[in-house]
Length: 444
Ligand SMILES: Cc1cc2nc3c(=O)[nH]c(=O)nc-3n(C[C@H](O)[C@H](O)[C@H](O)COP(=O)(O)OP(=O)(O)OC[C@H]3O[C@@H](n4cnc5c(N)ncnc54)[C@H](O)[C@@H]3O)c2cc1C
Image (spheres, rainbow, N blue to C red):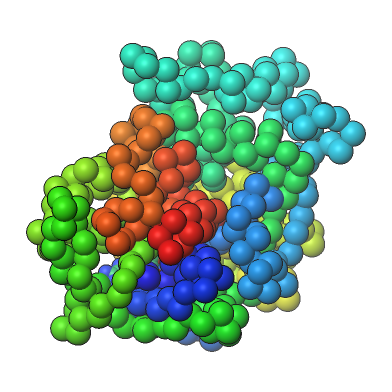
């Protein structure tokens, strides 16, 4: 197993439960991959590289958490408050009395930010979106912006509902998001069943969950770990016109041989390894160059007063940040997620001065939303991941079949896993775990 993110953990766990003894090779010193924490030297605490939310529709990820005893690190809430700069608050929650297809309609009809006709239309469009066939042959693929324009959605409705939804769920703007990607999110969150929108928020740093707390249960399953092992090259030979991996070579010069392999690394990392191994035709067949990174920045704020009135989180409207989370109430420690942060600051400008500017803009937004001026940050820090997700554009979501190889059989004795692998899914913990489960099952 190469890669110790959630995809690699899931693949190893599945394989181990089938009686195998997988070894995870990870280039970093910890498991968890992008679900990571870093030290905050001023406050002397671990902070996450970004707020990681799980929704009730992330069924395989939640099941993995339960199997590994990690569900104790999460707090649940069924209501998601939205706040706008006019100081209005709206609670999005599901009705338990209505059928699943209508469960969000009562909440939508009470949304104060929009006229009643727009609320009704939003409910109707959500239903329509999930029934569209975006994969019909001979039709050009649509972006979400195309689809919203086609349905005459006014800018105010986009600002109050659609754009925050697209940014929070897919970390991309409507112009660069395939309509099929948003359809998948809306179907899973709003229509697939009850509890799809239940939020599961981590209550300790991610490192304590996906590294410290998983080592023991995974070890008990017979899984072992090698850290600081970066895969550099594959050794291979052709057998009956199929490629068979004969060994994996690491950047420290060591090589290892196994019967089976799963490469659970991000698309760009696999692209590099395949090219360096003389397998660029495979990288091309997988279309790895179609995956473009999408950035997420997180503004960490230690404020001079509490916000949110005891609530854990909320969606912010009308500014740069989309999601506010209370990480430690007693310290007034909050995070604000800025999805697709390249739209605000080009990557090259994410420097100290860029960070300061972002902190100021977010504080301004919080002052407007919560009507508290002056609101001061006792301490602030910005974390940026340029490659947090892949951009869910139409080049990736144009076809239902993303690859012409089954997940488990990239080569005769090797499979792939990762949040980019499953054709219908955007980059999430759920897609990472699902692909890992499949690769672990298929491969072993
Ligand atoms: C700031 C931020 C916020 C996010 N928010 C959410 C959220 O709220 N909800 C959600 O569902 N998802 C969220 N995500 C996305 C989620 O973190 C990823 O989709 C998921 O963690 C991907 O898991 P993975 O195992 O596929 O890849 P990774 O986590 O990237 O794991 C791959 C592993 O492979 C290792 N590796 C890479 N190259 C090599 C090599 N050559 N040799 C050996 N090892 C290698 C890496 O070190 C890494 O540990 C967020 C991501 C970020 C960065």
